[in-house]
Length: 136
Image (cartoon, rainbow, N blue to C red; front, side):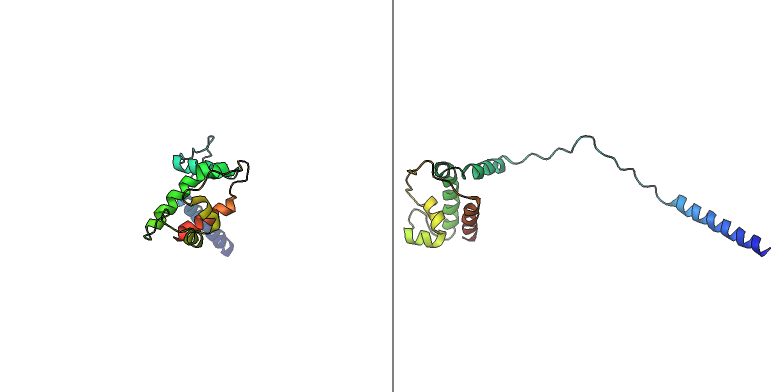
């Protein structure tokens, strides 16, 4: 008799576990997309700046023609916030504040490069110049 009671308890416990499992929420099936999710379009200015950075490593002519105007605009605005002007800044002050490499590019009345095939700026140089501009 005792064996029958134990078996009955085990059967009831099994039924209870099965009932609890049946009440659990069903997992949702994972759906795999056959087509990739399209990326949002990149802003035109970002694409243009990436092209600019990639092209200016080629030659000093590209730096002068394409990168210089952007750097001059940024430097002029940053300096204006400090009450200074790129146009009125003496070369010594410009070199001290902006560093030799950046000053050489943004200095007023910079002549067109004589050596058209000289290398442009490296990405490391450009990164350092941008850090200088950010600190202004």
